[in-house]
Length: 458
Image (cartoon, rainbow, N blue to C red; front, side, top):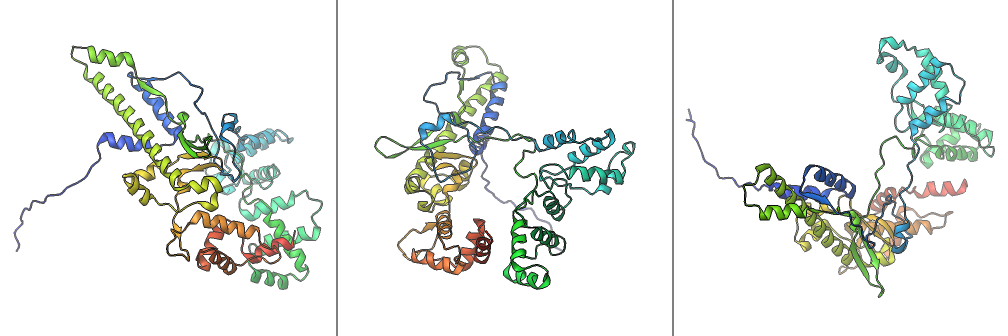
């Protein structure tokens, strides 16, 4: 029997100091999250004060992130305003109850059903579950809920209150006010939803439908498929769900100076304007008496906060200058000229950890004549080229080129994925057909046979 023995092992662990952990936490926050954090610092730490002075050269911009291809000159930034809040979906539906002549009991049930809708406008629970999971004193009745649901399903937007996708699409067809739609097309669309749901997504499935539904001509079936495709699978998509919508504040700007050169500047609005209160600092330096430990702790906290903000600013400044240096052509020519760039290369060039770069680009945005872009947009892997000496093209640039090729194709003879791969190869970009298909699907572009069918049915 082996005797138990004790062994000593030396193990070296690397741990981040508390100050460094705080600096990294501050670095990864978005501008709005940082402002909330700093507001808490100001309320808790008496040594910090907010700078009230606001100089004219400060740029204040707030914009939602929808990167356009046509930009605006940076002189127009101050005229931009935050978009107004969208109406609350639930409020809109509750207001519509008053438009119907309902008794108090039925109106209460409709309000109850509205409160149980998902953010997409669907009734997520069955009526039986709603009855069983409510207090007994409510005395809910399934038949009364069915009647209340039928009223709710007449509300706008059309399709709201459905229990599944098929019911929502059927409701939208029932409420369709399109006089140009053929009655046979409507009847065929209802039949497809009820008995052949989703069986029209490929040419093979369409050919089967032509044989299974001889009462309708192929053109009527194609028109019905197009009609269903125009319906909204999420009835309340685009409406506010009542939660606070966070705006985006760009952290840096790339602009062209008087000489036509691209320049970078950090937007002062993206950094909280705080400092250590000057009177307290003088008092601590002149005080000969013993400082209270709590006071000393707050003083050290204030210094650590300021150091964290300074580290964030310096890191973003260096990162922005590196992006500007590597993506000069993008700011001139747009997405087609986006160069491949990786976090690993950036970390090596800047002498930082790759995780630090990842934190730095998290929820940070850059404004330029091309639009407003997240910093992560400028980082993408390279794809292969015919030229061994070339650094390759970024995936984002290839997707943009692919989108351009499809937009310029003959709609009567759309390019297949194989033909698209051949067109890209002529421009020095070697991609397999399945890779082209993956990029096309990422751009939400239909395959060639569906694009042709869409053109024929217009």
